[in-house]
Image 1 (tube, one colour):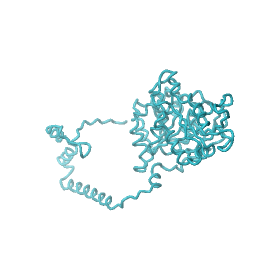
Image 2 (cartoon, rainbow, N blue to C red):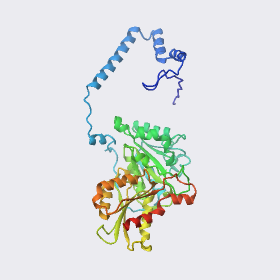
Image 3 (cartoon, rainbow, N blue to C red):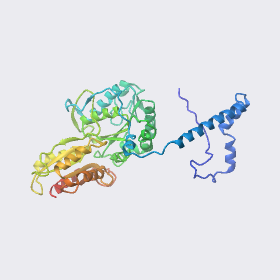
Image 4 (tube, rainbow, N blue to C red):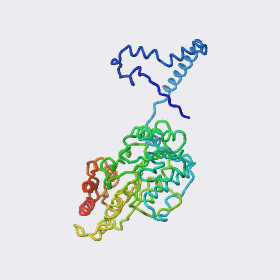
Length: 446
């Protein structure tokens, strides 16, 4: 059985060289010096005859020689030369050859499943494929999780692999990292994506940086129920994917439909790197689609052309690209399908091409560039707030790679720069869906 040892100790100096200790009374130092466990243990070994003075000195000399040898080796190392490709190559662990292959991006066919059912199926099939995969989270065992995605998993896979945790996100992520170090896989269910702030040090400083720092991969998937539109207020509705997009070492996934959700989730468990897997809460039981029953994966960094424009920038009707992900895919699709019944201010139809990014890190820049070069106009749409949202990064990339092909400024459509309101009318105004039509029409008329 595990044994917990609680040690009451004392810091004899500051945590770094510049920290002073003048605020600590000298008598406190004197008192704790008498309790030094290393000195006391050494004295006890000498007193009991287990250790002789000669042997003690020999041990100390050996330790000192080892330290000096290591220092000498360190100083003899040549100065590192920065090579961008090599530096970036150290950020992520390479894919393992030991993962049994499954179908990649099969035909979008099969029984109709809700988003939540597709995620549950992908999770269960991943548990079957990876014997060392452990699921952790608050109330995910007997209760089945806040959204019931792990309902029945305890009976199916056992309490050793489906584990309830304390309400401490940092500890859960840390435990997941520890499992990875031991050669296992771990999934953590963040009860709501908003709560991830309690685990940021573990995610952004440990999971994300471990492979770059010392070659240790972090085989961890963190599922993130995210998004607004459900009347859950500012602490259960945030879109915080950008907190992780800018952290090298993390992969960021955001499916928009059941087919992608299952395939991308199974790909996440095959990937040896930490994956932030965003699931829009409003899609769980409202979005359905065909999902193959067999295990399959969808490769990261491969966007999907949801709706292809027939016209190009040189043709009539006017065409434009909507670059989006998550719930934005459904807003854009609804707009494109409803345009036939609504007259344009400029008098002509608009042919919209919709790109679903699927993954933000890695990003499929080639598909974005090809679409914008084809249509000549781009709307970047996301649920996150405007300032600091992914739209700014996308706009910069489009500007860098497509400037000579643009016929109009890039338009960003995003949520207002406020917390997510609780009142339904305010939340509706906060979200960008109601502003999308005007943005598209304005861009088309440019």
